[in-house]
Image (spheres, rainbow, N blue to C red):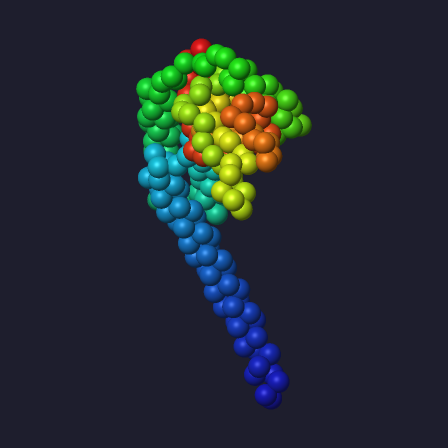
Length: 218
């Protein structure tokens, strides 16, 4: 009798369990979709503060996240609102992005021994001009200040000097957008007990970086 009673109720229990399970899955998909929309909105707000080199990449990520949100719950109101507005928001950010780059100026290429040696360094470096993937082709060098001591020995005598400069480089994928990457660097001589304030350069340190219009490098 007990078995018969349990058996008679079992299909109902199974149906109820499946119904609740399906409902929970649907709720979870909605939660995931709305969470992605929240992250998308945060990313769009943060775009102006992001580094130049990653700002456009974030546009692609935002679009990918929206596609994912639609896969979770395409009929969700917040997802539909994001789909309706995202292209216009990203287009507006692109305008601001290019305006910032267009406003930047290049102080002019330097000439002379140091500038030529710096260009040679970047042309021949496996991390720059000779890079295996997406090489960074040097377009110009601007010396920005005087020589400085980079390292000293135990008697406080200079064993390495450095020369601050801006190096403008371009990667092939950014040519059509007229973009060049500018790096604030210090060109460093070889470490030596007889160090002199002159090339050749042995290494560099890199500070900040940003985009500029490639046709301004001259």
